[in-house]
Length: 629
Ligand SMILES: Cc1ncc(C[n+]2csc(CCOP(=O)(O)OP(=O)(O)O)c2C)c(N)n1
Ligand SMILES: CC(=O)[C@@H](O)[C@H](O)COP(=O)(O)O
Ligand SMILES: [Mg+2]
Image (cartoon, rainbow, N blue to C red; front, side, top):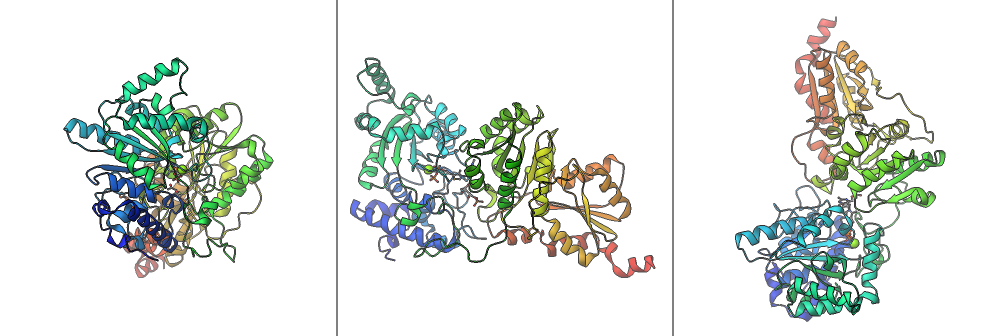
């Protein structure tokens, strides 16, 4: 692959000397490089193929890193990373010790704001703009936000605030590719489509001209209001009504349109809004045709594209959930499925096809999703909200205030619980056990394998209040989930292996590693199934029949399932040594999921080692066996 011009780019300063023709060639080279490099590492592809020209134009026009570019979500920031001195590091993208798949302040001065959860860019850029203004610093602040991310509450809140904040150097670039991960949903999306249609295009072009003439934004707005009142022009865009100067839509792959428009906007004060139209997967035919499949692929050969695996892979927990959802929906017509923009990731494709009237993709709107589910539950329907653990963090107040406080019957299917691997700390679902178990009325279930996942989903679904079932990213141990919709007694665990001296109380899929470790230790292993209600009886009986306990969970130790066990023992006035194993009090970077778990001592070997280290005296064979004899 030819990279003659790309080879000359060490930093964005090198872009300044390239003429328009060179920049276009650079775009071709950069796009080829992105495709080649993502096909070798895996990562987010379609979105990055769409931001090549935008990244070039922004860095060519603005004075980065003095000027701030804030990429929303940041999954589309690879061209930016490559242009800002990280080309050589793309080989280790999202791998342990390598660079992140998202912008990170610690990684580069060009990464103005750390992201990965969506719709934060306008708030962050506005905050920076206000700080710069107050400090008297001449600086531009640019938020680049996708049409999917634009649909979230935070983006609207920020626009609402920015539109009346005087004298801020803020430019919002809406990167509109008419796609979220899956096809976009919602009224804003429809509105954007109308904006792109001919009816609005002429009006938008006029606004563009007005901007270029440097008419002060508010005056311009007032003028158009007046004209509109007289029925002379088409209506102002929503963004203008919110106090922004709206320019566009322009072709985001056309440097001849992008460069002069950005240059003009770069000297205008006040909130500016540029609407660019791009294509997800641009330049790679297979991704253009199927941007969903190429949103976040693993490694593949670009010459042939993503291939179906020959041998059927082990079932993922997501698939187990998706199948359960369809089966339960077939049995119970009150079941309603809700996803905040994660249809594929949450395993709801088949559910949507089979039960379209009961499927709701509410957009990137976790807060709304939770309260929407609460409303459905008020009317005696049974919502199942499928949500990644990390994204439920967005809907915490809604969970407490709208669902739990009213004891509403909402089932939370929490995918990606625990360490997720390549996406890293931003996406790790490490906190849900701790933040859910402290909420009154909540049930918190932690299945240990695929079969248990199905059982606990049915159990929580039938529980007439708020209940959550958490399961990790990827495949389980291969336990056949079956087709039944049986449930299990609420708040009761089961002993999986009877041993002596030490009892391991496992919460979730680490029970499998505990069983392996227990063989060498001759320890007892209990699959606790529920963090809440906790099986107090089982905890107390294990404490009475063993010298020491170990709690095990793929979640933050602080406040987690282990804490629930120690609280129960304290309450009963029982003193027994308890070793709490789980995730430490630090953020864990990206890497391969299994290695990350091993790195924090949560594989079978690490669990055995921790238990031996803590209970060395207890496990000393001669001393104990001698006593026993
Ligand atoms: C709060 C939150 N919810 C969900 C996601 C998952 N997610 C990542 S990218 C994405 C789609 C974003 O669409 P858009 O902003 O239009 O960007 P595009 O991929 O089209 O470039 C979603 C839903 C997320 N990162 N953060
Ligand atoms: C950027 C983002 O939030 C998603 O694209 C996420 O990376 C998907 O993760 P999964 O691959 O686990 O579905
Ligand atoms: Mg989009």
